[in-house]
Image (cartoon, rainbow, N blue to C red; front, side, top):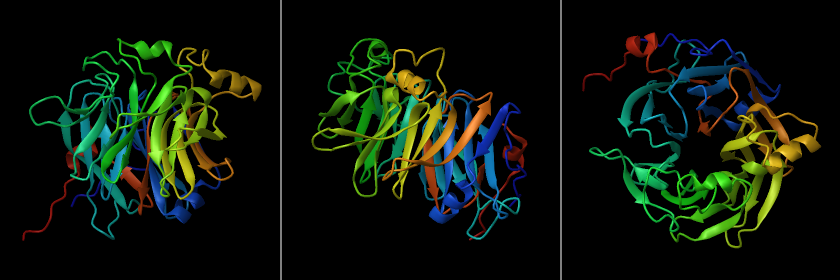
Length: 357
């Protein structure tokens, strides 16, 4: 095996400035996890872990319009501009890349979908990639012949068309099947959701097609916690919310200073991504008023929230050239991961193979 030569922070544009809370390293170590998150604005996949000296490692690699990220044992799936990427950890147990990284994720496969505006994705019980096909307002899977194979659409969508009618965006899997999705509205016309940003956002139960709640503003990232509770981002209000799966009642848990898009739940904590506004896009949202009331400015990064207290306990902040984030995923059992970019020296020179049987 040729060892990868990328260093911590490899692939990072000089304009990106990353800072973190003092307790982040201890939180990651005590929970036995690292993180992967994405920025579609800068087209980057980030992995964050802790080096042997206790310092935070941030590795950044370029993937055009990096969106949904999903973790399996030894594997990452990444939705991008017109492809779904599969990255494999090339290391055997006990090996280290560059003497520091206990997981090195190498791009091994890319399936071309065309630009269908892939958002969140998951893996079903049969190992199929299920992704939110936002442009065509449906859930889809990969197909060897076609750009995608549609498997479900909201009942209020009358046809599949490249019109982003309701801005379907988030996906929660349960027991290996799609369970909940989020959409900004129930619109059934081209870009109809854009006039419905402030209210009417929905969580939909996929098996039944029923609306769980329509009391949200620009919702994203439904997520089922270890105890079976349902969580989501009420992004237009800047709130992480718990949603009753039977009644649809929502409970505000934490206000976060930015536009929320990605959510993972781990051991009673929410890990969520924050973005700054795009061209004044907060003006019609309650989020803007809440920021003004708190004398705050939106920022870009990651927050880790205690779901009992609602307090932000740890954070990562990105400044400089990056202003918008998308998804975040927890990588269990990995202390310090890195990935390899697709058009890099490392991608050409990092070679591994199993022994001859």
